[in-house]
Length: 419
Image (cartoon, rainbow, N blue to C red):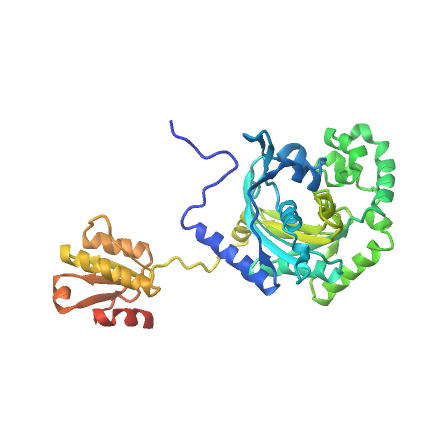
């Protein structure tokens, strides 16, 4: 019986993996422009990290984490998101002591959530995210948003739409919480089971419920923006001002709360036309209390995360082809046993000079080898037979126009590099 891939995962095969490499390269280059440095954290962490950091009332912690007990009787979880792990590393490695502040980091790596697989939502998925820790300046909120927007525009995505909100802080959020509970209490019996349990524990999460009945019940619920304190209100206005200055259009969505408990103040989502409708392709916001929750000093932070898979699907739905080069420079064909030995040496010399090259390893006829060269998209076919060995030359066939020329072996590298 064949063993199949686990549900909710996918193989990334040659031909597609080059698209991933291109996107990852764009992510790294964009981060370099904004002076964000890469960090790599473990794929699994102690479960407590996500319980404390992400929040015990979130869907991620309550329903979606891949958690197991290891041989040391420790509860371990495959990371469901990147921020908590980056903040743990920031605290543990005392990055707050670095002379260059704020600490600006990015990551690219796999995340794991047990949920129903669908387009753009897998059980193993790859996130690109950034974190800026150590600054309360609203200008860095705008910078993080601008970085995400620049990444997508560099890929060629069109009709991006930014939605922003402020979800308040520990001062103004309790006031909004009381008003929200009062509004929803009379409809408690009509809420879905999840929202009934959230009403007392974390009523703000009810605004994020996808249940249609809950959506209608919260349609006229009080907005957090109506209750922002004397710190959060000017902070939000300043963020909007910076976005205006760098000409990034946005819409204020007072119902946006995001799905993670650590968010404070600025929250945002980037939408794009994809999957046949408008879909969220990126989300992020401030998390000013998270560093302290994870055991560090009280340090502010802001970041975002986006799915590489979702970016690829959105690019495909918009008909955008990435400029990925999968061609081969040279394909070597040997005619005879002695020629085989010679092409092995030539192959090594070509590669040593940065020329992508390959040869036949299946003892196929010349016609079949030419077809293989064509399938590889080879620019040139280099043919070595008995006559070429005697004269110390190589026949170079240009696969674009079909022309052929003899080139001395001693001049082959410079000839190919000059083309």
